Length: 334
Ligand code: TYM
Image 1 (cartoon, protein in one colour):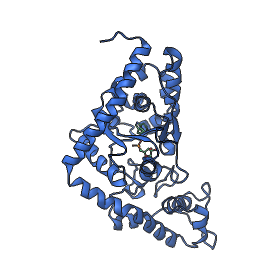
Image 2 (spheres, protein in one colour):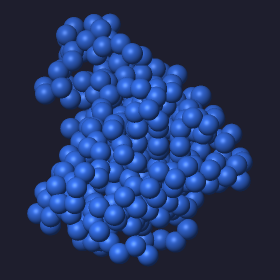
Image 3 (cartoon, protein in one colour):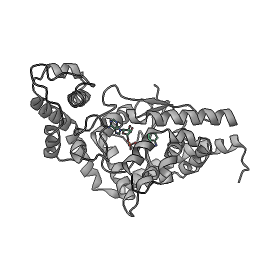
């Protein structure tokens, strides 16, 4: 990767940021910002697919900006912006919708999961066409690399498929992006249901460690983490299939300490001690972020200003790509 490699990744302002978001994505955004040309969006338009109350999404956008800066994104280095401040996203999204097939969208596992979770509730058409908006987010920036958690791989694949189709129909216009997932932490599982990913919409909040959780809450969640009923000296071992709860703790521990799950397993004989040590290792990483987040939230005017600066920089790139797209299609210039 070079400083000119364009990297983009985004996060939705829905609920609080959790350990999965941090290990799967945000930490890598922070680490990568000095080695690439980084763009990071707070995708408030995506959040509208499940927003039904006024006054929520704007507040969540500001709070998420504070979290991204607290994690270490430097506004002088990375471009951090709110998606709705860059209208090119929704404009290109329509063109993307016209270049993706109904069948392709129907096969998206996230759509199937989300509609199952929302059974009996309102399911917006936006939830279905969501990947077209995500493709627009990525393709607008001539993105080479998209640092994400494992659950986003399918969305990057469909983005590539759309870009290939568009380039074939209208001539070379879009760069084909690649998903980049971290070696450790690409799929953090729920502490209560270790066969499901840790998620903001987790049935039980005890399974999801939020970055703003107070230390006592974090420790309680780790101490209550679901493991299994094995006993004996080799109960603590790394086996994702047979021992998903223990494997998840070991992987989290490994991700925050930079060691391997096997090394950590060798140091413990009992689940209780592993849970406490993992909670403490996680807190060592989260404590400074939480403190910084609260400091940044004290100056909301500054956060809003930083997002405006980010949007201006983002629009410079996005408007050029949108123009190129219109030209490729051969639309009548305005
Ligand atoms: P979102 O907002 O659900 O999640 C943000 C990032 O966190 C990662 N992540 C996880 N990683 C590891 N373990 C977990 N349990 C876990 N849960 C979440 C996600 O993989 C993601 O990287 N559709 C996207 C947002 C989006 C986007 C984009 C991403 C919109 N446009 C363009 C990249 C590029 C989403 O809902 O992420």
